[in-house]
Each structure stands twice: as C-alpha cells, then as structure tokens.
Image (cartoon, rainbow, N blue to C red):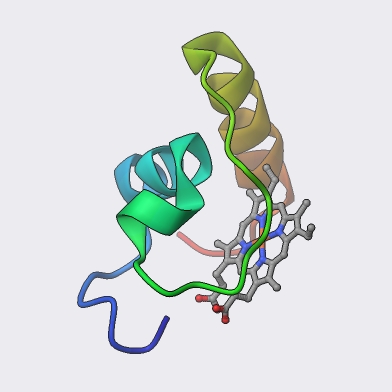
Length: 54
Ligand code: HEM
C-alpha cells in the first residue's frame, strides 16, 4: 500500500474498490471488488459523509 504511488481521492478509491488486487498489486485486502458503479458511488458517498478530510 505504501508503494502504491498515489494519494487517495475519490477516483483512486473508486478504482480500488472496483478491483482491489488490480489497482494495488500485492494488497492483502481480500475483498473481491464491487463491479456495479452505482454501488461504488454509494460507498464513496457514505465514506465522504463520515470523512473529516477536506
Ligand atoms: C467497500 C468496502 C471497502 C473499502 C472502501 C475498503 C477500503 C480500503 C482502503 C482504502 C484500504 C487501504 C488503506 C491504506 O492504504 O492505509 C484498505 C486496506 C485493506 N482492507 Fe479494505 N476496504 C473495503 C472492504 C474490505 C473487506 C471486506 C476486507 C476484509 C475481507 C478488507 C480488508 C482490508 C485489508 C486486510 C487491508 C490492508 C491491505 C494491505 O495492507 O495490503 N477491506 N481497504
């Protein structure tokens, strides 16, 4: 994860949860990914509500 070479933002998170192991090779995250864009958008919207980051 530290070597992934990007800063997290909504676009990176979207690509990551679509296919964690494709987006960050070698990740231990065993979640297989969410193919449906509307589900990923809902997850990201929810996390954005909880986020204290700008
Ligand atoms: C859609 C739901 C999920 C989201 C949005 C999500 C998000 C993330 C993110 C952003 C990271 C990277 C954290 C960092 O770089 O510090 C991460 C890592 C990780 N996640 Fe998830 N995750 C989800 C579901 C899951 C599930 C269901 C599991 C367990 C089955 C899981 C297990 C892990 C593990 C073990 C890591 C560490 C991977 C590593 O260091 O190689 N995640 N997750």
